[in-house]
Structure formats: structure tokens, C-alpha cells
Amino acid sequence: MKSAIYPGSFDPITYGHIDIITRSAKIFDNLTVAVLNNRAKHSLFSVDERVNMIKDAVKDIHNISVVSYEGLLVNYAREVGANVIIRGLRAVTDFEYELQMSQTNAKLSDGDIETIFLNTDLRYAYLSSSTVREVASFGGDISKFVTKEVAELVYNKYKK
Ligand code: ADP
Image 1 (cartoon, rainbow, N blue to C red):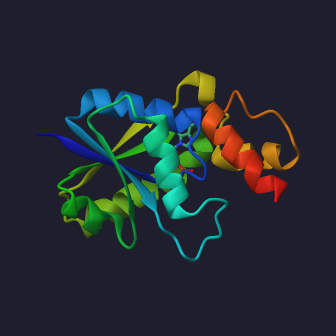
Image 2 (tube, helix red, strand yellow):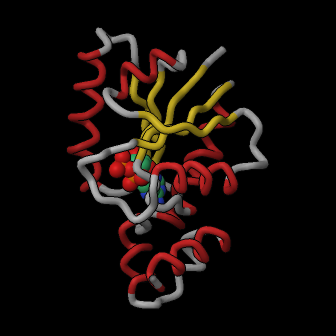
């Protein structure tokens, strides 16, 4: 069984994330989508809200589990039996940070855990959760960035 883990903030999940999840689920037997519970970072949605949004967005794909985790990713990956970390790459600007993280994780896991990068689909190359939050905060249209259900939840946050 080949198992991979796709970690991230997913604040909120976008079509860019969904594309990476869909493609990864075709490559691996099991995919764990892992929402980082980062207490130091202020997020728009709670971890539980993010987990539920992802579950709903990918409910038609059956070899996926959606969880939250705290602490070191390599430890969590070992716990769920994943020896591959999936990350998405959009532009050169992602590369430096991602390269450093992947090398750190390789060291921390004594080379047991590989990071595999999937290139963004060109349709989503510009898309990030922070863009979605910013556009929504000004009442802009986010329907091309996130699912209908997610868009509603995002707008609700900014209504308050
Ligand atoms: P993080 O805070 O860990 O970067 P994100 O939720 O922003 O969490 O992203 C999780 C992963 O998804 C990262 O590897 C990121 O590069 C990737 N990603 C985000 N948006 C896109 C996109 N539009 N296309 C491809 N990959 C993406």
C-alpha cells in the first residue's frame, strides 16, 4: 500500500488544493489530507471548520481521510503510515521555502520520508487561500476560486 500525506493550512480549501488532492488520490492507495493546527498563526477558520470543509469538498473521492495534526509533520506522517509528503508548487516563489522544508523533513526522518511536488494546474496557478480571503473581505466574487459551500462560509465570516 502506498500512502501519502498532503499537509497544509487550507484556510480555506480552494480549487487549487482540490486539484492537487484529486491528482494525488489517483497516484496513491491512500491519501491523508492533514490540516495543521498552528496555534501561533491566526486563521479565519478553526481547524474543525477546515477539516469539515475539506471532507465536504472531496466527499466523492473514497481513498482519502481528512484529519488535523499538531507538531512535527514527519512524526505525524509516521503515525499514519505515510512515507510520502505531497506539496503543490505554483511559482518560483514557492520553490525556495518548499525545497528547504523538504530537505529538513528528509533529514528529520533519516531519509524515510520523501516529498513529492505536483505542479499546479495552469488554471489555478495564481490561486491561494490568502487571495480568497482578501477578495471576500472586500465583497468580491470568489465563486471561481472555491466551491459554493465554501464561498458561503467565507462570506459569513466577513459578515460578522
Ligand atoms: P501552507 O500554509 O502549508 O502553505 P496552504 O494551505 O497554503 O498551506 O497550501 C498547502 C499546499 O497546497 C502547499 O504545498 C501549497 O503550495 C499548495 N497549494 C496551494 N494553492 C495551490 C494551487 N493553487 N495550486 C497548487 N498547489 C497549491
